[in-house]
Length: 63
Image 1 (cartoon, rainbow, N blue to C red):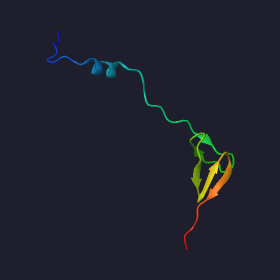
Image 2: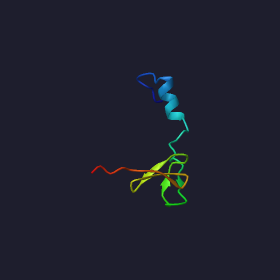
Image 3: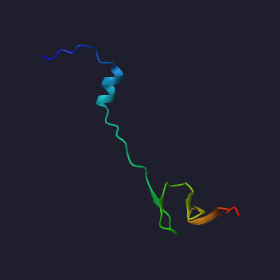
Image 4: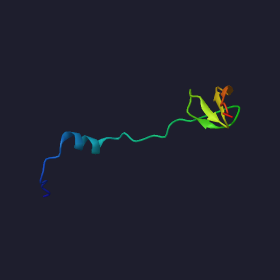
């Protein structure tokens, strides 16, 4: 019968037995641009900041 050389800690044992897995973050599609982004978050696209399908601000170009 197999005999372990060292005791395995409870933490290490529990990590192996867990069923929690990584999941991909949920993505929402912008109705205006069609871009996928994190829900309830603003996102930049082509120098414009979008939130809920509307342009919130534009990036300033330094001359």
